[in-house]
Picture (spheres, one colour):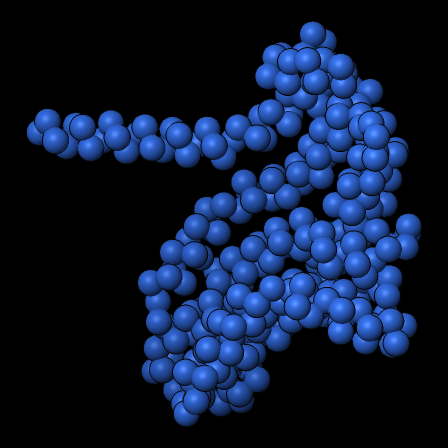
Length: 275
């Protein structure tokens, strides 16, 4: 009885510590978004003397967040569509067909997932520059698709494996062809996995900096994260404006994650136990 109580107390302490570590930076960012820079420097942990909304108006104007966040949304949406379209088909085939060299295929996916993108940055830039694809959001979404597809295929494959083959055979007996079987039967069943993949990729794309800053350098094609970094000066920075811009950029994706967190957790749990 005593040991279970101690275990429960330790569990709550660990969860509280984890919650503080997760929410601490966000609360600090929100707190300092309403303070002038001198107060942030002298007392970053104190409450603001008054709510200074001018930080948000300057951040919105200087970082052109209306335009740059729309660019981020375009690249994110195109990447999600590309990954879901290609990865769902590949995962279905890999789940339903007997692949003799499956170990080699899975090792290849693992290697591409863990390999740092910096290794391919120069040849990619050289090729894209020769093709005239610099400052092209669609071309950048293809890079993101190549980066995130192995993870998406591996996760979606577990969902397709869990579907009973009898269901597939019954649908075939009813006269459905292969495309109808895939699009009208299989995809609706694995929709939790598709939603999970879309949410994870959306988070990565929205916050991605290296590829976006390398391939989208034009002022009209810049994403919000890249525009955010330009707020920091070489010799001085308006930290109130920077904190306010960070809040504006984080809020949409944070709200989306909060709204879909239940589906996300269910999808991750389902993907980890199936297959």
